[in-house]
Amino acid sequence: MVRPVDAAQAVDGHVVCARCGTVADGDTAPPTWLCSLEDGRRLHFCDNCARLHIRAVESRLDSLWW
Image (cartoon, rainbow, N blue to C red; front, side):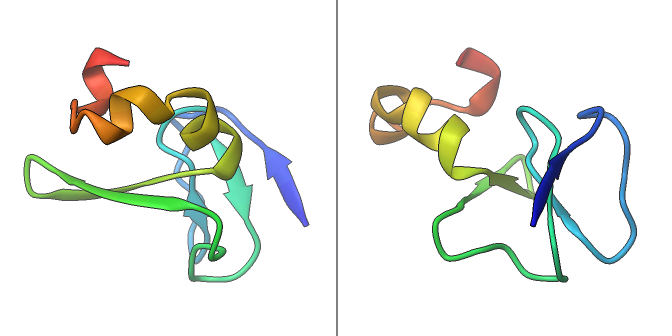
């Protein structure tokens, strides 16, 4: 089950989309989510955000530019 939350809110033991704040159940990201290493931080993006910004992802733009 995936439920939306505030993107700035940290959820212990769950993976949170860095763009929209969607929380995935469990402590690992679902296989459809994108993982990005930016400025030494590992960021996860849900499948909806990844699909919406696929051209920027393929261009290797940091998520700040999306």
